[in-house]
Every structure is written in C-alpha cells, then in structure tokens.
Amino acid sequence: MTKAIDILYIGNLENESLHVKLENTKAILKKYYLGDERPLCVAFSGGKDSTALVFILLDILEEIKQKNQLFKKTYILNSNTQAELPPLLEHLNRSLKTIQQYADVRKLLVEVFEVVPLEKHTLNVQLLGVGMPPPSRQFRWCTSKLKVQPIERKLKELFPDGKFISVVGSRRDESIDRKNRIEKQSKVNSHLKINDRFPNADNLYPLEYWNTKNIWEYLFDQDSGVIDINFLWNLYSDASQKDANECSFAGAGGKHIDEGNIGCGQSRYNEPQKSNQ
Image (cartoon, rainbow, N blue to C red; front, side, top):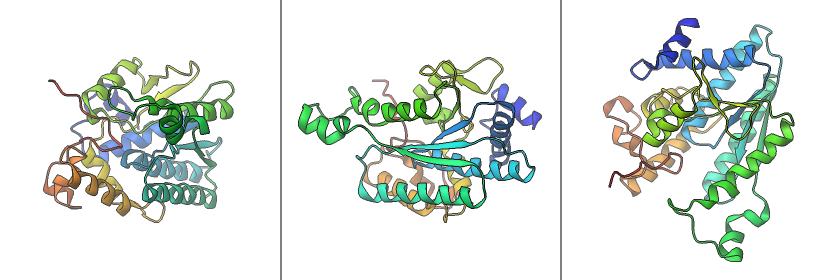
C-alpha cells in the first residue's frame, strides 16, 4: 500500500498499468476511510468516471467489512438537473436504486441520495419564466443553479460542521483546464485537494491519473447488474457518432479497446477542451 501511495506523490502514475492505478486508487480510498474521521461523500453523475469510482468504492468497503473495520457511513450523492433526456434519467434512477440495494444487502453503511434544484431554478422556469438565455460555454449559469446549489444544500444538511471528504472522479487528462485546476488545488505531500466552498472539508480525486482507456477497461470487467455498463457504452458511442468532437472513445473500434487510442473529447460528462484560437 505504501509503495502505491508514494508513486502517486511523485506524479508518475500516468504511464503505469491499470493494475497499478487500480491498486493505488483502492489504497487511497482505504487510507482516508480508515485514517480520517470525516466521512467520504462520493459525487455520482452517472457518467463513466463516477461509475468507475462507485464500483471501486463498493469493492473497498467490502474488503474493509471483511476485516471488521467498517465504522462510519459513506454517502453517494447524485444531482438530478431534471434537464436530462428520459433514457438517461431512467438509467440514473435505476442505478441509484441498485447501488443502494447492493450496499444494503452487504451492510456496507452506504446512503445514496438524489438532489434536485429548487423549482424556481429549473431549466424551464429559468428559460420560459425568467427569460434567461440558453446556457453556453461563455455563460454557464445552469451549472450553479441546477447542480452546485442542490448539492451544497444537501451537504450542509448531512454535515452541519462542514467536515467531510468529497470524492470526485475528475481526471487530469480530461482537459488542460482540468489538469491545471487539480494541480492548483493540490496540497503538498497529500492526496487531498483544497475544497474552496467548505473550509473543514477536502476534495479527493482517486482517479486523477487514470485515462479514458483505463476507465473503460475497468468498467467492462464490472457487474452490469449494479450499473448498466452497456447503456453507458452505447450512450458515449451515440454521442461520438453524431459529432466527431464529442467523446472520441469510439475511435477505439468497439469494445475491444486495445485496437485503437481512446481520446477524451467533449461529451456531456467531460469538460470541453479550450481552443487555442
């Protein structure tokens, strides 16, 4: 475990195998579950990265329980913007239920929550009632009202003292902006990142050195009975086929992901790359 964590500190995990990255991620999650009194709170969007993170979390909680070391609740939060297409909403609702059922059967002390925006902040009210312009890259007012504020209200309810570790599936290779943001938030000699909204909390990005290929390779080995991996694959495939600038993972040539290079484009789950022009 110590060796894996030391590798992360010197930042050379990018070129390591999936096995090394996975063991490192599990070691980090165990470290902060067992060694920090603050509960882990996982952000689950339903996308590929947060899905991989939830699978790994459930796995390490089972390992911890087998050693009779399970001692605190872990939380999984999903922000339902109420602006997604019906198939995706169905996938999210089904996933939240099966995650909770899986954890309950195994007594993993996991609580799953879905949060929604205030009615006055919903997309339809803002567009048709208030007269806000459609969200754009230059004016992304929707992110705060539809996602951030509902999550923050729930966090304040769950953790009145503001003490928790926010576990997020962000990765360095999603974009230059994302990499720079992660580096700016990083603490010296720690996996923890600064949480600029809650002073007593920290952020944790256990997948920060994973690439898109690692994510899919890992997901294809997981149980689709918990979260439907085929639905996710088809969702990203459809996106990339409609627009070459949108999530280019399909360039790998199907589920045989070693046949090509998987890149990270501009799907709804990934931060858009900034143009140099």
